[in-house]
Image (cartoon, rainbow, N blue to C red; front, side, top):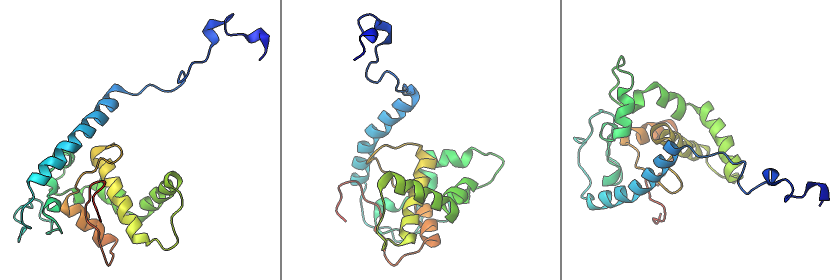
Length: 189
């Protein structure tokens, strides 16, 4: 070390760990804490509400839902407060379902937008196998983009059940022979 730059002579010029890291926005930090704590509450609430699979779509208020594989997945977009607030944000439009929202169509169903998300996904998670069906990947990315559109940042392993109408629209756009349905982290396939 150069003796002319000793830290005891220049105490103001000592680099400390994390000294140049950006500070986290308090509102953003509070949102992450709220999402993590509410995730456990949601899991408990859903496990107590499990009953037999509905035989009709009376629970649907938007008119675009179908009966899903499990009771917990039979959820309408209007019943989710964050989605409902997105529907109300533009008072001049008369959309009654989130799949009619222009941002949903552009962000979750546009193949070109999902292709860019695919490149970002590969950059963050590493390369995928050559046998990975592209429709399956696009469905996964569409669900991720929808969650980001509605809940902004959920945090790792913090999942939410998507509305039946959203899942149906994405599955129609990117069909497959088999679907896995919703699972919480750690649930068996």
